[in-house]
Image (spheres, rainbow, N blue to C red):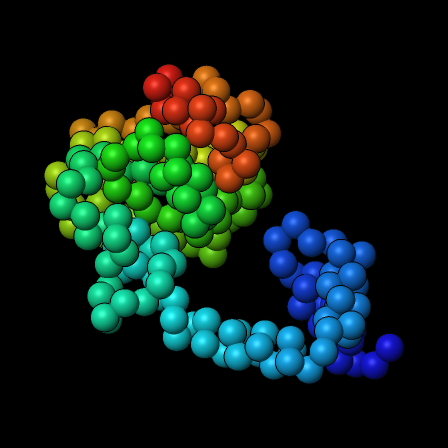
Length: 201
């Protein structure tokens, strides 16, 4: 195959959870589509960054509307501003929100920190989180809603230490029973999320 096919496989291979074989299937799939399909895909990709922006408060992505910098959750006056939930990625936030078990605000860290990582700012939005907590003095509790994995535990430990350095009076809690070891938040059902929130520690 030519360079463009190999480059496309390489790009697909960088997608989360996609291995070399899956990436190759995606490339072959596109080869089998007509020009109309490809043109539509190109148009969508070219406008994606224009139509979707990042919330200046929680850092989640949301559909741009009237140049508003805050997403619907952060701009909702009925949300509990005293409780902040930290999640690793946007999909985790969506999963928790769909459960209906949480009425506070969120912050998307942007990832998790591997055990041996020395420069944590390369992996998560720690600087932005610190800034958010310093600006919002009404925050009384931070819930670490991170996956029950080694990376999730490591990230939780690092983030908790950073929060306590800013304000030692803030309660830092973690999701309790309900999440099995190794389970990612994104793939948890609503009942599991509710149980984990009810049993946070």
